[in-house]
Image 1 (cartoon, rainbow, N blue to C red):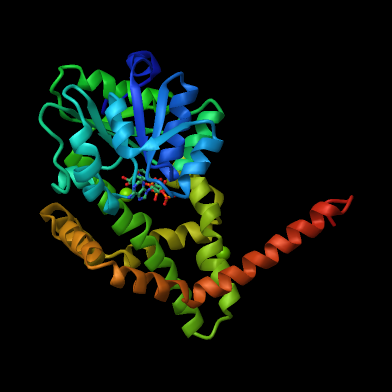
Image 2: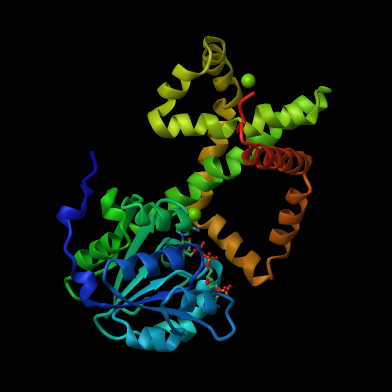
Length: 340
Ligand code: NDP
Ligand code: MG
Ligand code: MG
C-alpha cells in the first residue's frame, strides 16, 4: 500500500515562512484561512477591483496585488482558475520569485502541460486536496481534514519535500492523510476521473437514464426521482462503506439488477472509449484543445454551458427541489414537526 503521511510524520516548518495565497475563490479562501488558523503568516494576492478583495479583508486577511504578495512571500500557492494562470504567472509571478522560494500548485495541469515555466532556482511543488474548497475549510473547522496528494517537481534547496508536506499539514490535510505522487500522475488521473466518471460519465449516465424513461412515456418527475434524486442516497452509502454497504441496504431485487444490468450498460465499448479518453489526456491532445478553446475566448465552452442548462432534467429538478424546500419550511414552523 502507498505510504500515507499523517500529522506525526510531518514538521511545522511552514509556520516559519511568509506565504502568499494567490486567488480567494473555492480553494484560495480555504488555504488562506486554514493556514492562518494553523499559525502561519499569510497574504492573499489579487488584482485591484477583484470581487474577492473585500471578502478576504472581511475574513481578517491581509491582501495585496499579486506582484507585491509574491515579492514579500517565501512560499507562493497559485489558486487562480487553471485557464487564467499562465499569463498571470508569466507577467506577475515569475519576475517576482526569488532564489530558494517554493512555488506551489493545487493541480498539475499548467506545469505538466508546460503552460508555465517555473525558474530552476525556485522549488516547485504540488499540494492537491481531493475535494471542493468549501469542504476543505469546513472539515478544518471541525478539527478534521481532507485527504491530499503532494509532489515535488523541483528541489533546488534540498528542502522542498519537507516544506511541501508541511504546507499540506498547515491546511489540515495531514489529519486525514497525504499521499505522494508526481505532477504527471496527479494531472492525468484527475482529468480522467472528472471526464470519464465523476462529471462527464455521471452527467451523461443520469441524463441518458432520465431521457430513456421520458421517451418511453413515463412522467418526467418520476424519471427525475429515480435517475437523479436518489443518487445522493446511493452515493452516501458507497462513501460510508463501499459498494457492499450500498448493496446491503438496497433490496435484493435491486442488488440482482445491479449485477446483471450494470455490465450491459458499461460494456466493453464503454471501456474502450474510456481508454481513448485516457490516451487523449496522456498525449496532451485534450490539454491542447482546452488551451486553444480558452485562447479563442471560450465560445464553444459557453455555448455548451448554456445548452446543458436548458436541458429538461434541469428544469424538472429545479421545480421538484423548490417544492421540497417549501415543504421543509412549512413543517419546520409547525410545533408537531414533520411527523403525521
Ligand atoms: P476559483 O475559480 O474558485 O478561484 C477564483 C479566484 O481567483 C477568485 O478569487 C478570483 O477573483 C481570482 N482571480 C481570477 N482571475 C484572476 C486574475 N487574473 N488575477 C488575480 N486573481 C484572479 O478557482 P478554484 O479554487 O476552483 O481553483 C483554483 C485551483 O485549485 C485550480 O488550479 C484548480 O484546479 C485547483 N483545485 C480546485 C478544486 C476545487 O475545489 N475547486 C479542487 C482541487 C484543486 P474574482 O473574485 O475577482 O473573480
Ligand atoms: Mg480537476
Ligand atoms: Mg427505486
